[in-house]
Length: 162
Image 1 (cartoon, rainbow, N blue to C red):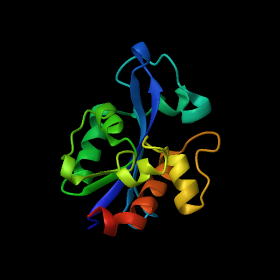
Image 2 (spheres, rainbow, N blue to C red; image 1 turned 180 degrees about the vertical axis):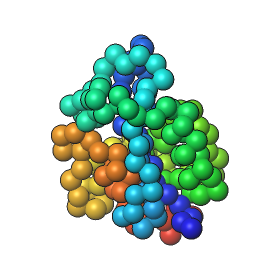
Image 3 (cartoon, rainbow, N blue to C red; image 1 turned 90 degrees about the vertical axis):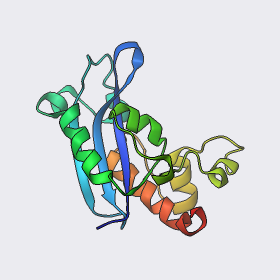
Image 4 (spheres, rainbow, N blue to C red; image 1 turned 120 degrees about the vertical axis):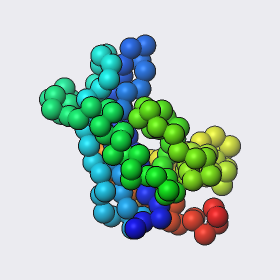
């Protein structure tokens, strides 16, 4: 069993531009194997699909599982594991989940990465380009691609993070 997993969500806009989870992807600590990739039927009315960025369209969500169903699957996968990602608090909130702070590895909060960006959180796109030499988020985003990039970035610094 993997000791850590990386997660990323794609969001659509809800009431008052609230971020609603519309897709969640989780990858294994090897950075390659996808453990979960699910579209989520939004729990509130969608005001903006953000399709140009999110890649989400109404058709993709038409037959999607409920937020409750998908969140339960996510909870089972992340339970007892280190959770890697970028701005994890946003994803966890959108999924109505909690995960212990000491079990999170949030790239947006990691001080050495913030120093690379003048003290501010560095975007995942910036980190992937500068630490992996990889271009991501060029056009529509993919939560699978972003979760894989998060894990690969974390693996580069995991020995320092602990």
